[in-house]
Amino acid sequence: MKNPYIKTSFGMYLNYFMLGMINIIIASNMGNLSANYDQPVERISLLVSAIGIGKLVALFFAGRLSDKLGRKPIIITGSFLYLLFLIGIPLLSSYPVAFALAITAGIANSLLDSGTYPALIESFPKQSSSATVLVKAMVSIGATLLPVILAFLASHDLSWGWSFYLLAVLFLISGMYLIFMPFPAVNTNDKNEKTSEAQDNRFKEKPKFWGEGLAIILIGFTSTALFVVWQTWLPELGTGFMDLSENVAVQLLSYFSIGALVSVLLLAVVLDKFIKPITIMIIYPAVAFVSMLMLFFVHSYPVVIVSTFILGLSTSGIFQLAISVMTDFFVENKGTTTSYVNIAGSVAFILVPIITSSLVGGIGISMTLVFDMVIAVLSILLAVFVLYRGRKVLN
Image (cartoon, rainbow, N blue to C red; front, side, top):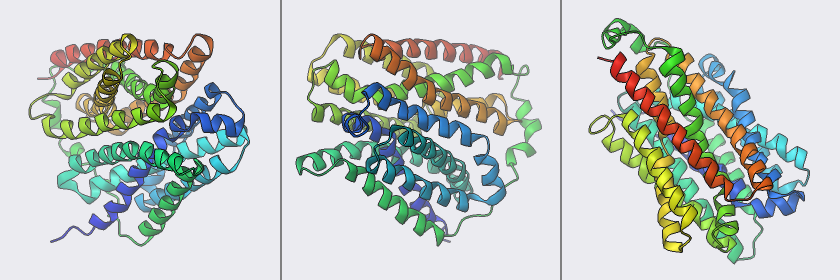
């Protein structure tokens, strides 16, 4: 029998296709936004922090609302809430209002996450991993396409604001579409709780929350930080550090997003069958560190393209793997412990643009690379510790 929720999933995936564009739309329009709001680029980058603030605030109530009210109203509300951000940012010229609208976008993001992931798992219980991996794939596709749209607008002398308005129209269509689509009943019974005793047999000793648990939470911060630095500063690095033209520098985001998409598809194939998540959590930051070293010392355009692609590949998916590993260690309190990882990621979304904008304003754009290399090393050390504890704790 055909799954009745396939058409519903189309609307949910469309949201994340657009979300992939929204994730980099501020970085892609730094110069335009700076002129529109009469603010330096360092302050424009803080709009990314504002999105993180909104995400963090909403994390404390979005999940509960999703469980209580159902996935459908939460997802639709998130879709419509994005309209305020997408219409208001190019239309208005007040920076404080833009900051408030960015907070609204962060709340919308959390609403989509809190409704979409459970809805997909409940819609496709036998293919839940593939269904959720496709979310990351759609985000990467959207992020790959946005620079192409911006290049088209620039080549035809069209306003950069149309990139925002186009997404607003698509979110309106998606929200209206999902109103008429069926959603599965909320599944409040966690099947894993029924097998908690069998799960306990996997442990040699009880995992320590303030040991490996805290380390995984910190990886939630570092993995997000690795990604956010590039989403925020890659075009500015291209123009200010690698001497690329503005249009060419924006195109780097496409190479980065293609790398992220390849990573998602690769992980879907190799995880658990050939390699463990914790191993990827060590390898990826190490590869990212080497790529950043290449970018720091070699500014040849082919090297820049390859390094940017590899950075997209090696910084995407670590956060999701951290959540997976967290549930392996703490099977009885998955909801609570994974929320800590999500909160750490949201904190990174807030703090990283603030820290990097201070470094850029005080020292120079190259400090974003140095900062991210430090984060990569810290991420490796944390993952090595988790691997060590896993061998001690797990049978």
